[in-house]
Length: 279
Image (cartoon, rainbow, N blue to C red; front, side):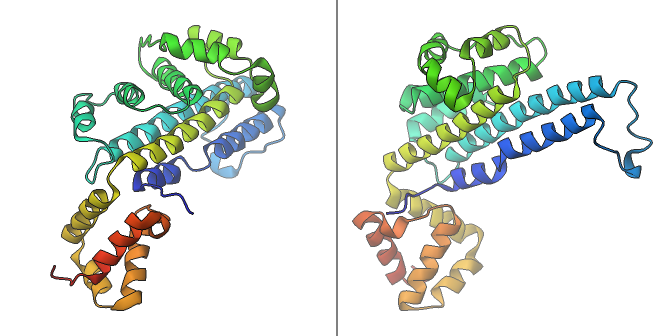
């Protein structure tokens, strides 16, 4: 059975893209600049002529990693905001609390962690990611991670796993954070991977927690209001063809595998397929 994925997750993955791959590509290019193996195009002849190429490349490396920090946190913020837009994946109570957080992604993150249990490692890493972003990009920001996150990052992963799987030194990573130093590439890549894991796990929890029939009905009503022509095209067909068009429409909004998601998903699609356009 295919696992359902929300539109918010689909959008998150589209935006974050291959963040690790892009980061590596830029850093490989900067290493080429440092070694003198990269020759600039005529396009950059007047715009780029540093006195110290190595120093310029090193500073650009820091800028690239800081930019990656900001980008990944923005993608996480986008996902959480989409979860709170109609049709919502959040409960009414949690939605009201979200509305009170303003633009703070960190407050939204903490509300999610209070309500749901994701991976404790992923939660701790996302805590570190957001606070590190704040320290790197906000003037005089001194955000510190939660004590529970620090304990998990210190003891939650064995030294062997950190060394063989992630090639990281957790103590060194936390030390760099405490000193407000820029993350190293391996630390940034690790935070990107675990943030994606956090969002994927959270999405499964939210979809399992929500009443799918009510959620999809709200989604279809919103789409019908905003794009009636699309529905007119769907309901101009009949029988199995209409059913398949409805399935494809739902898939286009991120819900993969709904038709195979137990009896409830099948009944929902059958009921909508049997309706007239007017109804």
